[in-house]
Length: 141
Image 1 (cartoon, rainbow, N blue to C red):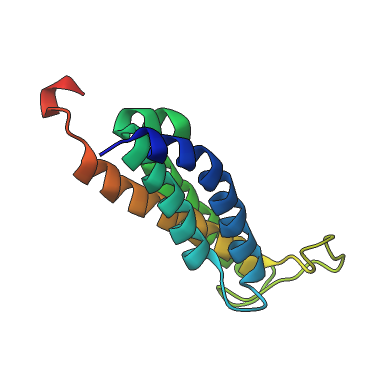
Image 2: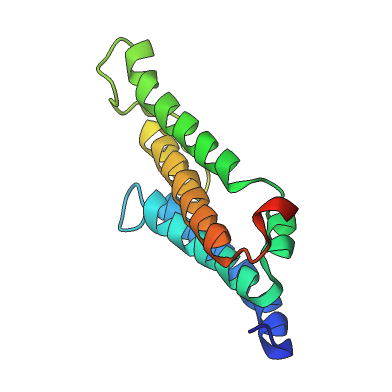
């Protein structure tokens, strides 16, 4: 399915998709968007690259396995929840920093949780697609 037109177009489309996924991620704690939608857009960019170049090249481009993205996402989301306990409040209580971050605004545990969801969703979708699209034989991996 890989054509010269698709491979060329992907080089220009994917950076914009990743930027848009980050926009959705950091916009989501105040307005519609967030980690889930941002993660889906990031995964769509990786899937598009996979369609154009194959699973092996996509795995090399990603630099990290989808399983590690999933694990990192779960860890970050867990840390966001535990922060409330550490502060002497209930699990998943939002804790906000007093000083705002330029462009983003306030940073707190809800944003951290969204980052965890972003990584988790990206990793899960990419793992499923890599598994379905991988044409290599089981013994050759």
